Length: 298
Image (cartoon, helix red, strand yellow):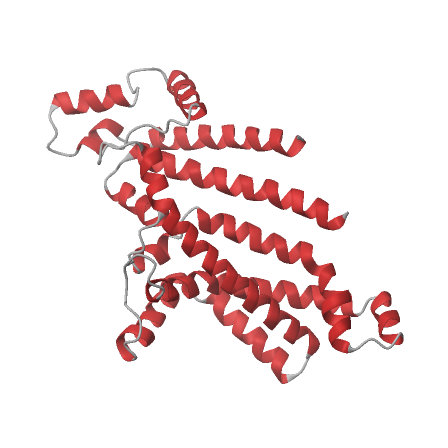
């Protein structure tokens, strides 16, 4: 309950910051959204729609009351409710984020354990070098390299888009999005495994004659759940908010691409709605992580 109360306070602060930031940008927001050739009546309509004719605190109070009713306003560019536009794009983002974290979790844990078991040897150094390469390569570079190899050179995967549930269209975006998480999970798993494998109780378990595989996966691995789960859940929370670069490069119809479209069209209600939605997702991921950590540590 304490975490939930803190989360509500964080959300109210985030809403205040997001609401303030948009109106602190130089210029008239109504004029910016209406465009250079808009008529006075169009600008007046937008000003009334966004409550720009009221005081700042009054606008904030109205906005919070609308959010409490799950009303994020109406998109200026499309005329549709912001919440509907977000929910239309969220399934694509959820699919991409889930597959990416599945790939990252399996790969990161397996390679992390392998690196810990071969500490200081060639395999360990190779895995660490691989994780360093992944974490230091910008997302757009990873996307371009994957497209160059698998679409241009080999021609086995489509370069972009989404066609129903055809798995060929999600393979490259999922691997590109998971690359950073793979590197983080490898390092966290390796470091935690090295710490656990040097513990006294592991020495005692080995003295009882258990096989090394049993020692690693039954006695050691179960004690690294908390830090590994923290990386997975927080990264998943950030991906659910939309991976802007990956979705833009691969024309994936998710929330990140919707946010870029809103920015290009100066659609302030849609921008606000997406950023607040991302904040809610990340705060919920933090609450779930706190709950999971308390259960795993019990």
